[in-house]
Length: 397
Image (tube, rainbow, N blue to C red):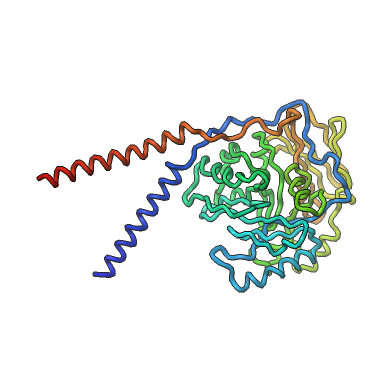
């Protein structure tokens, strides 16, 4: 009988905990007003590659794990120096370890070191990379999140304005819908590729709704021994190898993402050779409404993609491509497919008013938030009054 009492108390405690979490997530949580977004517009064209220095391209990965979620195993501890040596052997200049809810400072001796961690610990994988993090935030919501829940998490991470926030694997476990991507704001980058997936459709949804969000591509590796997870997706950034310069370049889009065709490699030696043979981007220019890209060698295709992800220009078997930005174009981004299947994703050029990159940002809705809260607490107070009155009547009898 004693065991049943323990089980009953445990189940009661679990039910109370779930009830409290539901209240915190869906009742007490901050509510936001989301302005109706629109496509990029304005007389001016924002060009992230303006005045880049072709001698300052560096290779970086910001999304890799050595730590298990609920602790650091001996294997994970041993893998920290290994991840450093492995990425260095492939010519990486910036090597970041983005453990879950933990800032790994192994690389902190380097001038380029940026403290980073992956935020999020619920099943539905609403996760973010937090670059230049001062501390770990533990605010998250365990159940399927509302749009306001998701915005609240982003805004909480952005309390430090120097932090750079990247939404990672946006469609994994249906973390973010097209509607979420349409309205969410106040973040910097979106992961367009990792070791196993592409998120180009998600990115075009973001851009088509006028959000000035830039590209990141990272491995998101969890198993360093798996050739399909390591050294497959990375960032090429136009920057000095100093933290502030790197963050500035990512914030303003002076970078591009690369995803290798991992299926073609059997060993790391094969992959290293492929790295050496990748074409370099010689020039990226925008002049007289014409955007031009030139590479060091011929590639399979150069595609130009516009509003709603529609392909609006294509060159084949070439080392150069160009596109004239038309009056009806809102943004233009470029995808390059190399002869071995490697993909390059360039950041977009888009219209703006010459001052601000965006006109609409989700705002905290004071009235709606406190209406929900006061209604709920008034309901609790009413229940307490009814219970108290019944109790008084019972005592008098």
